[in-house]
Image 1 (cartoon, rainbow, N blue to C red):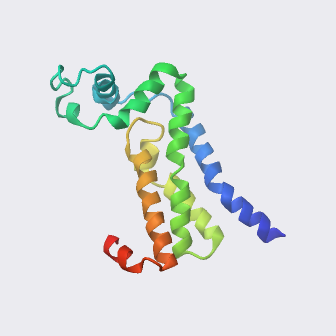
Image 2: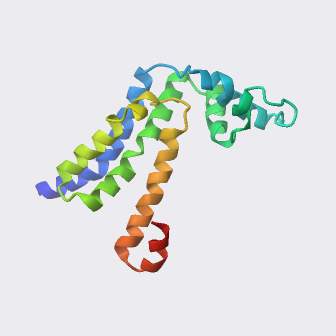
Length: 169
């Protein structure tokens, strides 16, 4: 009975961490770093309003970074409440708990230690906490990068495509 409760709790733990990160993001206040004003908002604006070919390098070298990552943030700043936007950005960044927990499952058998490692990885990194709720792309892209590692680990665990995965790792 207790094992089932722990297993169910184990599934919802990353979701709870993600929601907590969203609330912490709101407490950190607005994202007002220089990159937001310099290019995160402008690059998305330029892409959506067909200004990419006309305005040459208004943000210097940062004008030539891929604007696709900034489009969702730009549209959200135009249409959402700043507190809601901060919560959404933080909650999306907090989704990194899922792949971290899945990866730790392969190396650590004790579930309590897995939970602690997941929390430590989410809140123990100064870069993660420093960029929490911001428009920086590191925390959000890490969700996808670590998720792809999870797929590789899953494939290695199944051992069906062993020869394909050995070249990926």
